[in-house]
Length: 454
Image (tube, rainbow, N blue to C red):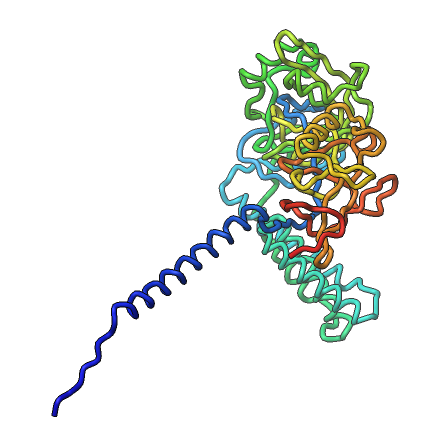
């Protein structure tokens, strides 16, 4: 049988190939068109508005001056009060041990006395509300767990004592424990035995009323406060550069009387302008001082002197403070941050700010940037009375123009890197319409109020 074979004509093959080529060309054209459209109309980018606080600071180097008295004492010392504790005259600050065993005995003795104190306080409970006591125990447990999570080891002992006290109160009130007389008697017997073994070490007492800091945790300035305050800018700078303090040796510690202390420091002449008013006199408002790496707490203070030497590019200032903490008491020579001003508001990308006229016409980007720079430097409201700054915010699928305050003395231009700080909607004296968690349009094409967003 003969089998017929079919031949494909060249024309058919060309037709198929031509169709494939056309399809490929169409795909390529569509891709190129998409890219061109994407370049001409890029997608909008958004950023969520969050709250922030910006500090206007001056970086300084200086020394802390206290009204301090050295406490004599040396040897193997066992301290009985914490650093920064306020004590009265005659309070026992430390013991001088003559045997290595005495320090261990003192630790045991303190632990037993703490246990006795907790049991006695639990017996003196007068409340009859078990629910409130159980809540007190739960709160103490949560506080203890929080201290563990944060790594605050100093707070663990206090948290443990609070929990045990709450638990013992519940035992007394519910009748599960008639009292702790037998336990207290047993502990007291142990105290008597350890006390007899400890003996009577030589005691070091407070020579006056004030705050105590042990020698291991404080520094001693090499010059008296009166000499430091008399130094001019160059002398003070040289003194600080050479190292102004050293470890406190040959003493048990120091006592600081009163609440006030002084910081005498130097900074650059340029930064010192932040410490001056328009007439060149020191700021009279309350400012804050903080010691990075030493203490995170900012304490309020008052400038008493600012001297600027333009020739050397340096400035000298004196600040007094009426608040004191244990961390501050330990310091001698220390770097500081002088916080002149704090601004809290909403953090908005500077790139998202637009400038429009009341007619709705938007200022060109070049004019917009110039407006921002000029308004930041002069504080004037630019573009005449019709000048309106603001940002476009995403509301549903629409772009809405939300005003922000024009730059003025009441609303200065405050920056935080590539961001500005604006006041939230509803703030007294503000026309700002921006709210916390708004979706601000950072980049977008042909934006206008009411535009439909894709």
